[in-house]
Amino acid sequence: MPLFGKSHKSPADIVKTLKENLAILVKQDKKTDKASEEVSKCLVSMKEILYGSNDKEPHTETVAQLAQELYNSGLLIALVENLQVIDFEGKKDVCQIFNNILRRQIGTRSPTVEYFCSHQEVLFILLKGYEMPQVALNCGIMLRECIRHEPLAKIVLHSEHFHNFFNYVEMSTFDIASDAFATFKDLLTRHKVFVANPNKTQPIIDILLKNQTKLIDFLSNFQKDRTDDEQFNDEKTYLIKQIRDLKKPAS
Figure 1: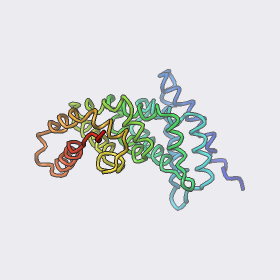
Figure 2: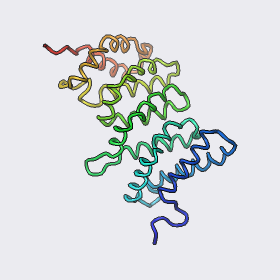
Figure 3: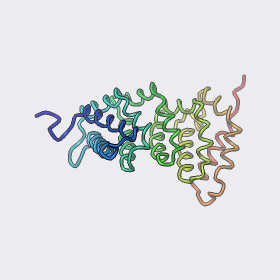
Figure 4: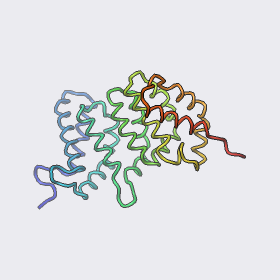
């Protein structure tokens, strides 16, 4: 019996259909209602492949085929880039698909991490998502999943876009500012090569020292009115101490 029956499209078919209909949504022509419906259906089909359905476990070979199609077609990046045209439930589906594919491992390899290392633009599209209220929290979820992986966290930390966090965490929308701070904190503390590790690598020390005064001033004045949030204030105090204690290496 074939792996993909009449009622189940292959990963290649799902990716092709999704890509075509996403393009229609982006153009905003007359067929958007039908295209939106097709996009939703395809996203649900992808989730079924990745997460299984009812009592059916995900099929490793089918998951591998879907991942490969997403890489080859560029659709994984296109979904992030055009997230704003997808409906509310679809946005949530994209987050789940993105994070599942990102966590995928083959032995000790993480193929999606490798893919994003050579397609770094996806990280900066996600970061810029904080500027769009309709996708900001979705982008935050995906960006935090990215920076769980040290090579991707390093790319963001070393980039000129890192400074954008200072603006995002001060945004007037509380939910977005809080989400940006959660990402900012993860970026600085999650990988023991970063703020908390006593054996930080020289490039990391250089970045933190270069921004030391700015980071301390910024964090000291950040959301001072949240006096009743103990965890938030503990995390803030911890970050400030770690950054303040940094010293230039003796020459």
